[in-house]
Image (cartoon, rainbow, N blue to C red; front, side, top):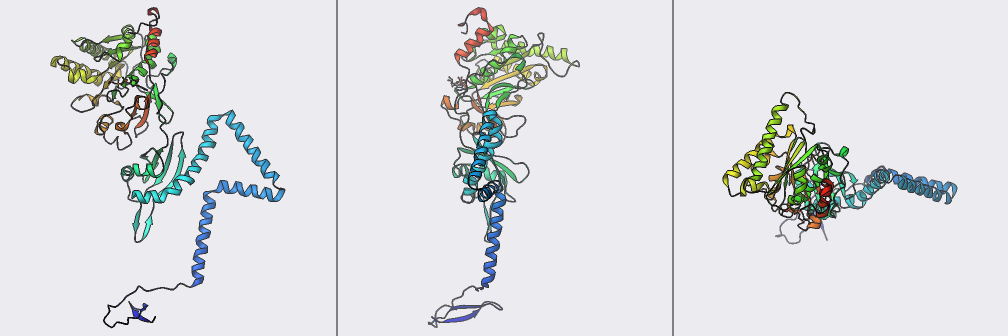
Length: 488
Ligand SMILES: Nc1ncnc2c1ncn2[C@@H]1O[C@H](COP(=O)(O)OP(=O)(O)OP(=O)(O)O)[C@@H](O)[C@H]1O
């Protein structure tokens, strides 16, 4: 084969195969630069050194431990490192037995986080992110978001990520399903990071709320805090505290979503203060289902009505009048409400808001109900009134009082656009997938999303399930003279 030289530019001589055919199109080739072999060797040696140093720094603890044991073995024989290992095992075992929570927190979880960082996240980081379209290639160079840290919880991992410059969290939200499948998680939620440009990815490994929570024990009166009664559990295992003082609560969920369990768990948490005369529960029960079971309890420690001919509306109007009287009495005297026997904290439960405000056939009753609920919700917070409204249908036209309920709970909803209607704009994008909660009662009833005051992102929760027997027991506790079967 013969070669000829061509010139591409000044000083750029290129060797290309000589053409035999004089009419053939000319062949051009890019210039080839020959590196001196010594320089190639040097670059590779530096590269290996840098990688070794990075590896040693990243794995400083296991590397130091292995090096220490190796040195002990070399210096004193193999028995010494084995004894050291056995001693460490005994210390860890004693710690685990003596104080399991601190052992899990400071030893098990960090070790697990390290393991998952190396075995799952770092290993698959580049391929998953490339496939999900979260990397950028510019002038032949690939830019990859940085994996900063991994933390392990009991059922989920949190991964701190430094995004590429110019990237925003919504780019990650859009490919949450790709990330979940890529890293073997059930789902991924994108959370605000600790500073601009960084986000937390929450990889849910296992549904912590998949098993029903039995009714919580009736608390001691001293433990009932109206700024957060315990009604269930959060996804991270912490108790779900529902604020009642200074707010009103809307519980939205399709039929069978478990609204009843939120209501009954709240009543159960309040029972000691009801018995002490410091809390009253006024129940409006248009469905005559859920609340009728505790009718005698409400009649003794509050009020109850299921009368569609005006009784329910009258109950609401009485509450609104009393609230006005309280407001007049308290005006200029006190700004914070403390329940007393004279002025107990009143929880007004309306089992189906839409029945009173939208579906009730009598227009006049509808208007009166809407007005009374409007008065209670707009002015009742500071004088010891809390309205808890349940609602099946979250559509705007069904309940235009929704904005008067500062605390909202989205249980299973039929459509995805209802999530933002209940929890507020952007809640679904921030992980409140209430439309994807399982319709199977054992798995999904009572499961929902709430916005807590301390956390900007919606939190997944499950209400404890108060069974018919539990309600009977509550009635028996409240009305000992009526015997155990007094519920109905
Ligand atoms: N927290 C829970 N945990 C487990 N199962 C539950 C829970 N809450 C409810 N369930 C189950 O789901 C079923 C439906 O619950 P519930 O009647 O409370 O729903 P709902 O939202 O009030 O429905 P509807 O609006 O039709 O009255 C119950 O019969 C119960 O078996």
